[in-house]
Length: 434
Ligand code: URA
Image (spheres, rainbow, N blue to C red):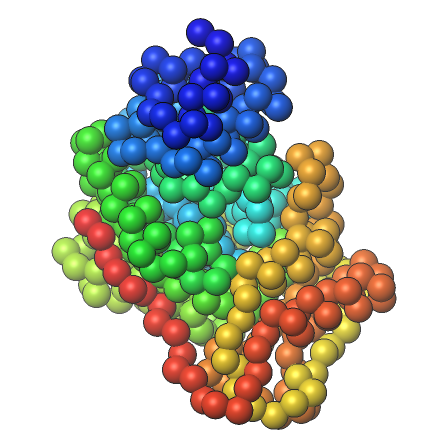
């Protein structure tokens, strides 16, 4: 088989057979196909699409490119959660400790930033000393001991995805239903969980921005789960604005700590409780999501969730004192408050542009090899529907220089529309697909 022929076939809008898809995926996993040909195929798939059969074959080939984790040594039903990616979307750092406090083991494999979206691993690595690379044995041991571990995909789990994910990030091939569905589901099936909760984002900061596209993605992944015999629930949640008020790596860790300390309420907490409640339900710990929410709220109120985050950080070599003193997280060279400058209502946000503004400041990668600046990003306290005056704080920029802050200010001002007409707050959850 010749990869150029396969790229041509896809480019011309033809269907690829299961063997052809396996050839491409194995070439990505074994590095026998060079990056430029992989990237060309990814772009052909992004532009032409794949049908349901090809998407399932792609998922299965990516799953088979590596091992399947064996979590059987951990007692209980293991439920994983995965987000299609958002801005200020740090639900894992909030819900993983809370769910673990409720007696459901969280053995979580997370990803890095992709395109304009942030990644849990990058956020965790902003904590001084924190490691996200554990051996499989240590990973299992940690979950048995403290109920929670969050690590990167190991080299042997869906290695094809590792290669393709990094290439997609820098070749504008992220926003493709078959590529997202196969990437997420191959990893989740390989991670050995018994059940999966998917957070499918929709809106201006989501990879799939239309509700129709997001629902189609959710359905495709639930269907792949069904074929694999795993219970999967997909919640389509709003990404018309950053989920939390903080965007950037250390900033999002700070946001999560403030939520777990009970200092901050709002959409980040709400979506974390929603996803976490379905994790408790799929684990059989509760009968309904409402009951799950009550359990999670108890863990939040008692401080057990924050204590669990401390344990998680300490177990993975990080400095747990960040939970009591967020100034121990990386700090920027400059902090610049920016005021709204006009009166009116926050009507709309271009959340992808906000994510790209943080990426350009150094919070995300533009090339595979880029080194992140964990300290940079911004706090955006305004929400869609808020009434603002010229003095209202639009954002606080955390930047490596005054020039970088000025560039980010321009981008953020352009991304937030303030107008005379009041608007409704966007919904947090649009649909639950089971
Ligand atoms: N998250 C993933 O793991 N893969 C994607 O393709 C998109 C989001």
